[in-house]
Image (cartoon, rainbow, N blue to C red; front, side, top):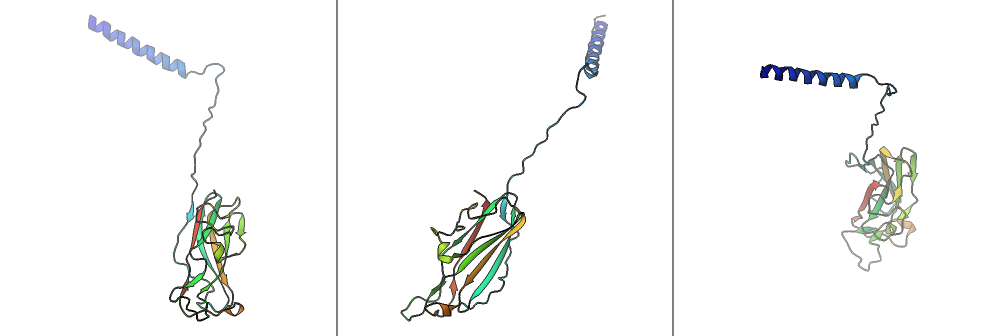
Amino acid sequence: MRRRARHLAGYAALGLAILAVLASAAPAAAQDAGVDITVSAVIPGRCGFSRIAPTPLRGVTPDLETAQTFSVSLPLDCNTPFAVGVRGEKGRLVNTTGAPDGSGYAFDKSYGVRLTLETSDGDVRSGRCLSDQIVAGGNCDFASDQPGRGLGSGSGIAAPGGVTLTIDWPDQSTLNQRLAAGDYSDTITLVVGARA
């Protein structure tokens, strides 16, 4: 008999639970028929060079004696406004195979640099700076080795986009000295980052 009473009590409890669920599912007066669900997400900012591969120098010949202008283009992927900075190691093209020897020949040569940023809002162009203005402490507006500093993209992004570095130097006949024979070089570093 006890067993039967427990069994009936279990059915009664189950019946009450089902009634409670049904009562809560039934529409009540003055309840909303719709529910607003807010969905939000965050896309983190990203900015960097993309698909970097050796890029041929356009329009360059190896002769420092004649005037030259040439460009190097690199692809960018920045989903936020950005800036590109340029830093020159020596600030001049320096003869790496010889040193000043009193011969009257020059062993270095200044050059000019400009940047063009290809953005979603159109191209952003810098002015021209001389190579000695892009070294550490130089006064060129886009001289920087810090990501996010340098020539800014305005409100434009580069997804995709790019940066073009243009380098030029004058004809040696317009300068005071001829160049000594040898190999000349400087290292130019470009940095990109979300605008600081």
